Image 1 (tube, rainbow, N blue to C red):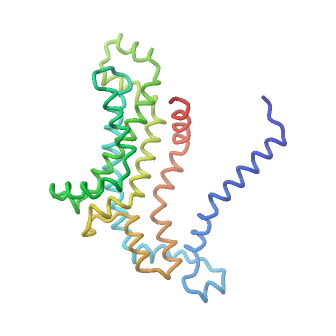
Image 2 (image 1 turned 180 degrees about the vertical axis):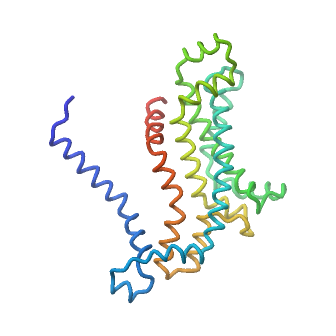
Image 3 (image 1 turned 45 degrees about the vertical axis):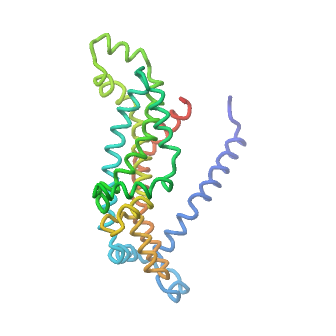
Length: 272
């Protein structure tokens, strides 16, 4: 059906309006991050201060926190995505006893909130001497990410073209070869979407690093920003600059993978 010029114009107006609503707060944060630090200079207006980012980086020790976040995120993303692909492949393409029970067990992992398990989980990890370590912060997030990742990848594998799998089996391909040579390459949008979602959730996680590292030895970037805010309650420009620094990796990754992310979300929406 052909869209008229009026309908097209209305669509653009609505999209622009919602874009302004979403991007407005981001623009305000950038304005404060590049603005003067004291009230008198702010009233005089006009001067851009990119040095706010340098000072916030040094005072907030964001270099150390960013490295910790990168290490934790890399562990969580790599392990959880790999396990999710394997579990989703088994639950989506194979029929075996207990498959339905296992699938609902993974769904239970999605529905249980972090706040309900974080205290007993802390004591368990303390007994294993994993608190105040990178693995103590990463392992709970790996478990939570696998729950969603398995559901996500199972949805993709259940809708994969059965003729491709049958043709590969006729040619003598085993299960692992079918997975890595056929299904994973054509499922790149779904996998990259999962990577982006897990990275975003891990990077922004606040409660797990706070509880699992009470000594502060494994302090991630969002946690460091919270402590930085406690020290500089009046420094609006430095707080805004620190917020931009912490949010920048997620924004850059999304910009880099946005086409795959949108395609993967659309495919997931119409498949299940």
